[in-house]
Length: 94
Image (tube, rainbow, N blue to C red; front, side, top):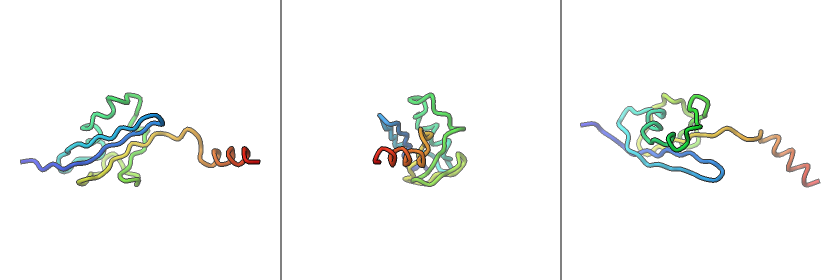
């Protein structure tokens, strides 16, 4: 009998957010959990080799083992550097 446990896989774009709750086998990695969620079928443009991944806001490698009730996050690239965005907002206030 294979032991399974629940995890969540989440990916968000500015206009939509997808959260999938799935059951994964013990010993499953971040990358395997994402594959099991089939979330990449909805977002074929996402490249896991280039995307940063995390568990509850902490960066994680694709081969990191997941634990029960983990929330696996796929981060999208930043559109603008946060420092540059602050500069732009500061200039608008003046």
